[in-house]
Amino acid sequence: MDFNGIKFVVVGAGFYGSVTAERIANNLGEKVVVLEKRDHIGGNSWSFFDQKTNIEIHKYGSHIFHTSNREVWDYINRFGKFNEYRHQVITIHNGKPYTMPINLLTINNFYGKNLKPWEVEAFLQGESAKEKVKNPSNLEEAIVGQIGYPLYKAFVRGYTMKQWQTDPVRLPAGIIQRLPVRYNYNTSYFSDLWEGIPEKGYGDIFRNMLDFENIEVRLGVDFFQVKDQIPDETCIIYTGPVDRFFNYKYGELCWRTLDFKEEVLDYSDYQGTAVVNYADEENPYIRTHEFRHYHPEIDYSGCDKTIVFHETSRFAKKDDLPYYPVGRDEDKKKLEKYQADAEKLNNVIFGGRLGEYRYYDMHHVIGLALKRWNYGTG
Ligand code: FAD
Ligand code: UDP
Image 1: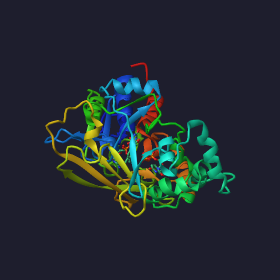
Image 2: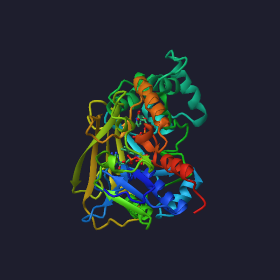
Image 3: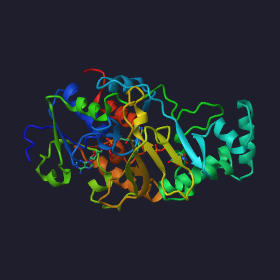
Image 4: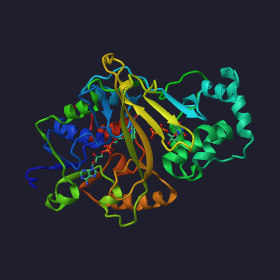
């Protein structure tokens, strides 16, 4: 493969790789080649519109854009307009629907009470005081210390076990700290200043981001197949799994992958909202995504079909797509070794969720890529 005259090669066309390529092309004014082993750009954030129903399908599970970082919001809006979708999630426990994240409605419905906002904190403290959690050092202790055992058991334990196949006492507390516990009736899933779904879908955002003269995207190309043909002086921005880059020399890092069972159903509305979680372990699904809800601005009145994805999770094998870094203690030790090796490489930059083995959202990787490649001057 020809890399003549190319100073920059980006591996992976997810958000980290695409923002990086756009910045190199438009800010530095340099030519850049993007290698992507899948047959499409966009990484795990990729989506497309189903032609029959005009429903946008998030191929790798629901992706809702949210950020409080103005720079990121201004930047992403250059490539497409966002709608006013606001994410709300229902979780099913013992056959009954509750609102998630845990808020006053969840708590009152669960306990059959009518607590007021100013009474909740003391009530939850009473619940958590029943357990002996002094210095929370893992997911279970962190959340039990905040809401007590009954709510944890109902809404967190089963869901987390299914999602991570790992006992919550072995998971980092940071995973659950992504979700707020609210003492009011605010049922929004996110708490950021800006939120929405691209009106023309994520696919369109990525196409606009990469459609510049200086950017050449090569789809269906695995970096490791062509690596030896890239000149030594080329700067490589690598957004694939960091352990793969080093040929797993310190062992494999633990990743989770997801499987989606797709169904096209004869309903104009199957579940009434975009995402329904299943809190109990008896239900093998983690959640069901119903994509038509992501576009309240689209008129679906003539469409009596809906498309749903039922999600399950498992540990990734080498050939699976890695979705989530698990981040147990043994992974952290391996990661440190990979990071030390990475620092010694002058011409390779590791970025993104896979390259850094960090549980980043879209706005995080965009922000990091902008910081690295200097947003604002071009
Ligand atoms: P990726 O999108 O994973 O892109 C990496 C790319 O590198 C891939 O396209 C891969 O094919 C390519 N690649 C890897 N190895 C090679 C190789 N050897 N050669 C060539 N190409 C290679 N974030 C949010 O902000 N909101 C959400 O609602 C949200 N929901 C999510 C739901 C799910 C189910 C998942 C898994 C993630 C979700 N995220 C969400 C997170 C979001 O997907 C990530 O933040 C984002 O995809 C990270 O972008 P990235 O560029 O780092 O990685
Ligand atoms: N979580 C939970 N019950 C829920 C939703 C989330 O226990 O109904 C926990 C679970 O451990 C999950 C974490 O909260 O991994 C973060 O949830 P989030 O929705 O942010 O995870 P995502 O699927 O977006 O990565």
